[in-house]
Image 1 (cartoon, rainbow, N blue to C red):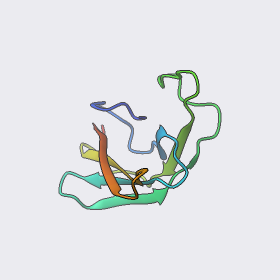
Image 2: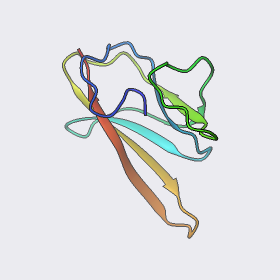
Image 3: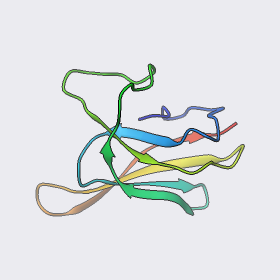
Image 4: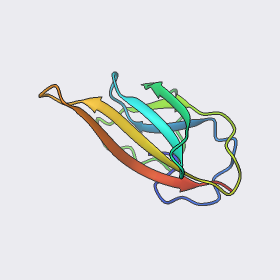
Length: 99
């Protein structure tokens, strides 16, 4: 994930959140109080990727755009998808805190 889970001092103008790409996944960025600030179906992330991202073989990154975030705020990234059994799964991908 970018920003990395647990990251602090993340700029408020990051513009996007990146995760391992699954075409139908919906990614939501929430404040600590649960208010969504961005939610969208992932699209493939354009190159170049941030140099801090691990790039294991075969991993493709997807992204959603995010607006300018509030300073000194912790955000949680949630990934929602349908598994092989047809069940909806919501995964907490991690959180980060802005400057």
